[in-house]
Image 1 (tube, one colour):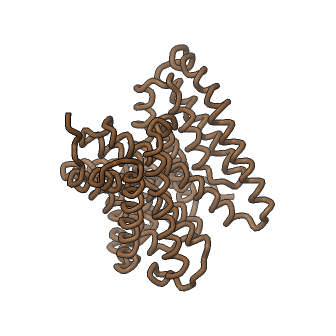
Image 2 (cartoon, rainbow, N blue to C red):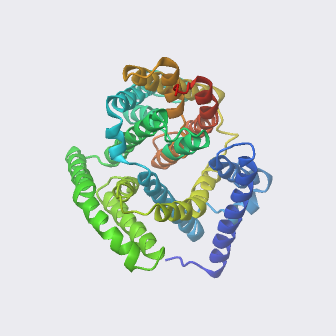
Image 3 (cartoon, rainbow, N blue to C red):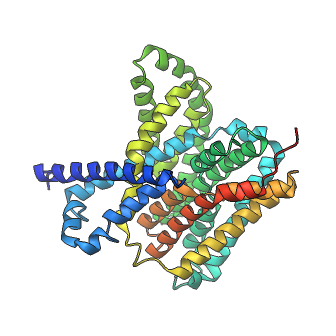
Length: 411
């Protein structure tokens, strides 16, 4: 059995230190041009990965970021932990009562904003896989994934865009947020079931898994949520601040993630549901929420997003046709679907278009989804690179296009 040596520890600490410092510097430089922070972190990954450093000095790259051995295992463990915690933060942003308050408009927007991009993505992947660089047609798992990937939005990115535009608390802003919450919840459920079905050859095992996750979800969002809600005042006043709430919340997140992983549903779903249970509590102080958010997004998030560039050579796997098809499908499906839904819900056409472009921002969630699919063997590196490019392009164009179509209500 191989041991984690003195030299391994030096390499791991050096790699993490370099990643954190460089990603912060590059991200801060990008903020001056209003680029999302995640873009800076991905750029650092491309610079340190096989695309740049691995091409210029492959020996040094392999020494600092080895593909095999104890350092690689340790780093992969940290990256997997980062994904789990990122989904916990995403869950904290979901407030189910907000979806219900928006009424039929949010339901129409969420439904059509999800079903149309899912259908277009599924049909393209199933019947025309050559356009996406796939050799064989009729791959159901691949087709469901493409449909799901084109359906998801990036709630944290959307919230930040709306805050920057002073639209977060407006009717349009609340509609966009509520619709994004609902579509993200459904998309992650579909993706988790997809991984469970791919990893299980027994249909009975899949049904047990589905029953388990339904039971777990209902428990966490009813009884579990009430227990958390009643415990939080005691945790936040009797335990040391902010260590108490930080330790308890992340501990529960990890236990929920371990449970869903045990029943063959990816750990991310357990973390996501735990985040919803905590985020829905009226007793969770806003300061506590911010501390959890800052801790995870400033330490764990860079490690994950930089690791994306360490896995894939972006130059070798950049296919113009695949990227172009993914971009067209992403804009067409999401914008048309969400705009149609908002219009049916009673929103005027220009503001409905603003809603459509608002929900089109994919950002971090799309990249997380793509990374997990790549690791599970659902997609090729070419599709993965196309999804990363699509996530960045849609995030960058969302705010200008909202601004172009949005009409403020007359006072």
